[in-house]
Length: 102
View (cartoon, rainbow, N blue to C red):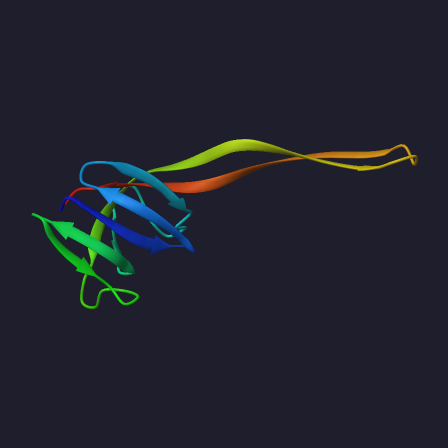
């Protein structure tokens, strides 16, 4: 596989072999588990191109769960002018880090 474009959690990712990427949290996945991505938009291998309309049928890309990670902290600040009201909250999104092996 040279590269592929897939859709997961409403986002599109460019996948290359032996690279990792962060996708939204998959709660039931443990370290070392394999997941299959089935919404493949584009696939290229050895200069042969497959294009889905919108997705390729009968195609899967196996990925290996290598880590559950936390994203960067986001600070949310709410204020009301002239009322002396300020509220600060923080949020860290959880992600599942996966590795494309083949």
